[in-house]
Image 1 (cartoon, chains in turn cyan, purple):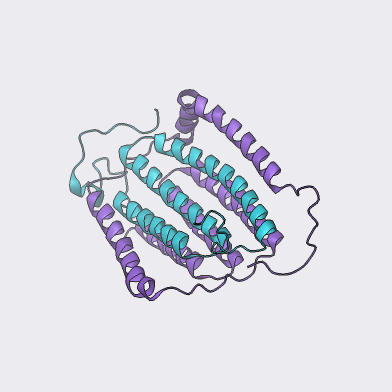
Image 2 (cartoon, chains in turn cyan, brown):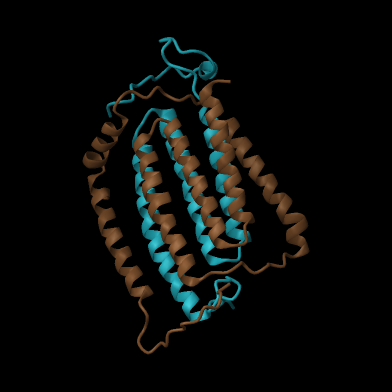
Length: 127
Length: 176
């Protein structure tokens, strides 16, 4: 892939804190910050998924988790100097769009049949 | 503190605040607008990671199309305030602290484990390289997604159409 020049072998720890040898490369945000943020957002998505009672908000929590994963994909792709991560994010967004369309149609059907969006009332499969 | 780090911290704070607000809000429309804020902040972070195309797609498709769909359904169903959930004592005093602990631990461990990773310098033409990948190496999955979207459209249409003989509600009552 063009674009990202390979810089294998120059993987020293304090490199991100220093000006790089070329001098024109500015100091960047460490990748680990992005990954920590991604973990926090994913965890918040999980918490929302577990705690919320409204089925639409539960869907939004899933979207939040997908977004956190997208951030991790792009951060890793940047750290490895590859573009495949961005291609993956593209596909994740496409699948999320399809999932939202079908999921929200299911929500409409459930709301029409049960007159409720509370997941505790949607217990047809519960033993 | 470099300008990049300052921008990162601001955007990260916006994203986390928005995500917390998604959970705390009781009305779905407020959660949806908070989620749009999170997506905008993430688009800014993608720009900071020099992936301009994904940042544009994030705003256009995610914040634009998908969240509009969410807001549309909330309006359509006239969704009201979420019912209060009576959390058990176990969940309140053991579950919530454990969840917060897990969150902090996860972020800390992932951040610490990847400390040696440094961003590679992005050359010019990231979007060009991305399009080359997408339409050469990944052209088959790319075409498959069109079938996936077609199936999703059909599924949404079949699911959401009003069945025969079901009387319309026509009411204005709130669904909670």
